Length: 299
Image (cartoon, rainbow, N blue to C red; front, side, top):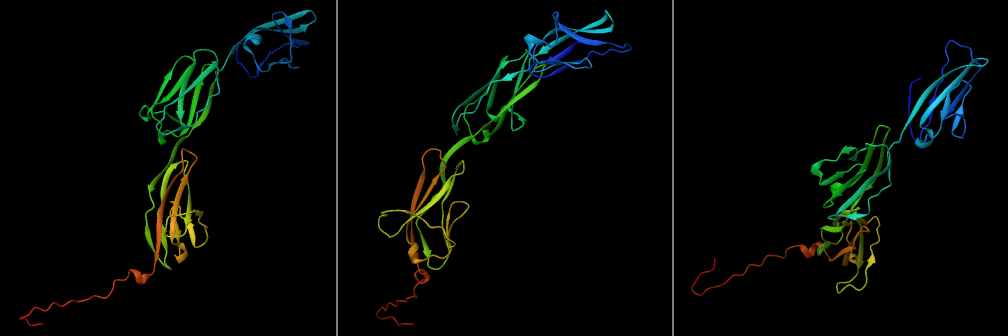
């Protein structure tokens, strides 16, 4: 019989084939002990020996298959089982981080036969040296370092450890957060009664910020803001701006654009909406002034 290589933690089967002889029984021995001698060993009627959840210390060694072909006559063969231990990666996770910070994470292999080869992948691809990610690898550990975290570092990172026994991996997600910031700030503007108007406000950040609009009536200092009721007439657009389909007199006053995404502090900016009629915007009649100079004839 050929020697067998088994992988720790898995099941393995050892066959004892008898060809050309009628036989009475097949028995297995290890170190002189008749098998099975524990719950992980099973000997089937056809002579196959099953080792469940193979363990290096307990299961590695020589196994003797003894076949009774006639009364008091045995034939036997020995097979050596070598147990190889696959890598075991310790659990790791990326801590919460935000843009511009330093990131360091270690992938540690706590057990496994040497040599062990450790590599990293991002979103299924090799980590490019130009990505700003530095990788340092030793015999049983590989560290991933990012000097200044940016949005391009968002993604799934996989630590892969391999040896002669097996290849294992562990994947974790790195999420880089960015506090909300204004792309377009609201400014005071006029609205025309009965016409559509857009109060501009655009924000950026990660996760994408949520925008809320508030309204304080009146033209003096705002006393108290209330959430803008979102109806068919008033809606928040995809970019965060406020759409008023038909501007009414009641829409005049202070508006506050407020954004939050759970990162850092909320941001807000106020503006004043003045409601005017179309006639307020029409130019008045032209006035011609004639200046009469003595001694000069008027045209």
